Length: 207
Image (cartoon, rainbow, N blue to C red; front, top):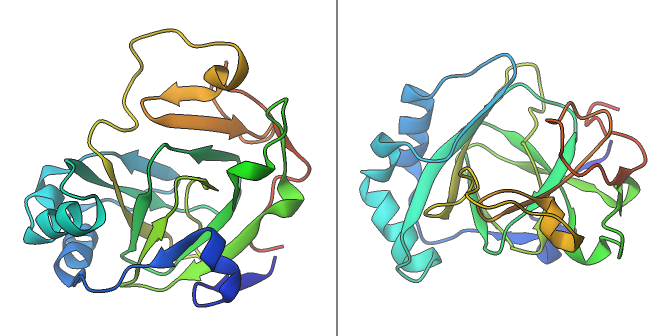
């Protein structure tokens, strides 16, 4: 699979590199305290990350002073498996090199399917932060080598937590957690009840 740089013009429709904030302390803390599992682990909120001064700066400058959560998505992965989107931008902070496979919400069909051939992949170098726009489809990062990946994840506070209401019908059936809409691949190993709508190959960044 062709992997582009985030400096490539093709990335502009999906997001942007975040400038003007020093993420060094946050990257160091992610590498120092968060695990690197054989699979993929996601934690929406980690107090030790949210206590850093960097968190206040992210909230003020990138979310207009909205409350935020800072967690991580770490592990070993090379597959697409699913795509998700939020009603808000997501900030990804690469504590190691990481590859993001992304697409556009506008390409989801009326019956909530998406052709995986439309996906593009981008390398986010260690120490770099990118804003992933609300209309950008994404899922777990991938590691460009066998060493695994660690990525800090910033979202509005309360995102990706268990739902309190039942959802079904139309786009509503894609909601799998608070502020999270998901379309899965049949080979993605997703929980029962997830909407399976990815059409085509379950992409692997190594192929």
